[in-house]
Image (cartoon, rainbow, N blue to C red; front, side, top):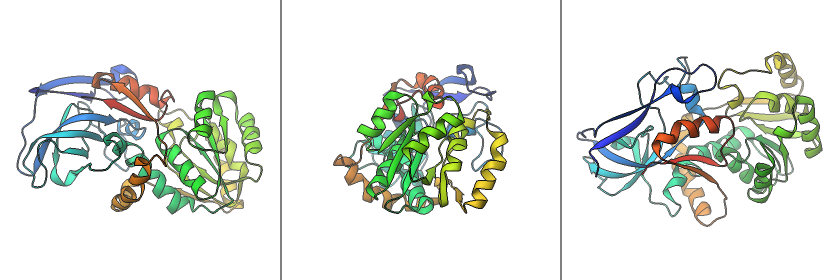
Length: 339
C-alpha cells in the first residue's frame, strides 16, 4: 500500500467554460483515521455536471468549493483501515471521497456495496443519477400511459434511466442527444421511440420542427437537463397541464445564455397551458434511496435496465474528462478509474 495520496483541487475559479489551469494536483501523506472513521482507497470516481456549480463562489443549495480544496464528488473504494464498528478492511464502500486517491469517511457517511451489480453502478445507474431519474419522474413527472415524454441529454445516466422508466410505464419516449451515434444508442440500447440530434438542428426553429415531427400528439412531460435551445424549442409544444421537472441546465452552467430573451415566452406558456414546473434537488429525497436500490438493483443485475459507462483511466485525467463531459464529449456515465 502506498503511503502517499493524490488529490485534484480547485486552483482558481473558472471564467466561463473550465480549462485545465483551473485545477491543481497535490500529493501528500496518507491521512490518519480517528475513532468513527475509515480510510478508503478510491477505486472509481464519479464526475457529474453539478460539480461545475460548486466551482463558483455563489450562494446555492450546497457550499462552494474553496480555492485549494479537493474537488467534491462521490467515489467507490476499498477500506484499508477502519475504526468504525461494522466496517472492516477490504469492505467496498460508497461515499463522498472527492477527487482523490484516498479519503477518510465517517461511519455515517459511507455505505457498503453488497449488491450483485458492479460497484461502479453505485455511482451511475444505481447511484445519484439513477435515483434522480426514479424520484423526479415519479414525484414531478407523474407519468401516465399514452403520454409523450421528451428528454435532453438522453443517453446520459439520468436521461437513459428516465427514458427506460417512462417507456416501462407506457409512454412514448423521445430522446434529444448530440450526434448520430448517441441518437442510435438512445433508440437501440435504451429503447426510446424516436431521437432528435440537436447538433443537426442549428437553431430553435429547426429543433422545434424536428421535435414536432417526433411528438405528433404534443409533449406531456419535458424532463429538463440542459436548458438552451432545446428548452426554447419544446415549450410551445407542451400540452395543457404538462409537467417539467427541472433537473439541470447544463447549457448555462458556464455562464452562456443565448435564450434569456425567451423568458416572456416561457412564462406565457406556463400560464396559458397550466404547466407544472418543478425544480428539485435530489439530496432532499435521500431518505428514499434505500428503497430505490432495493427495487432497481436486481433489474440492473439481470440486464433489464441498460446503462453505459464512459471510463477514463487515471485521477490526473479527471479535469480533462470533466471538461469534455460539460460539452457532451462523454457517452454514458462519466467515471474515473483511480486504482
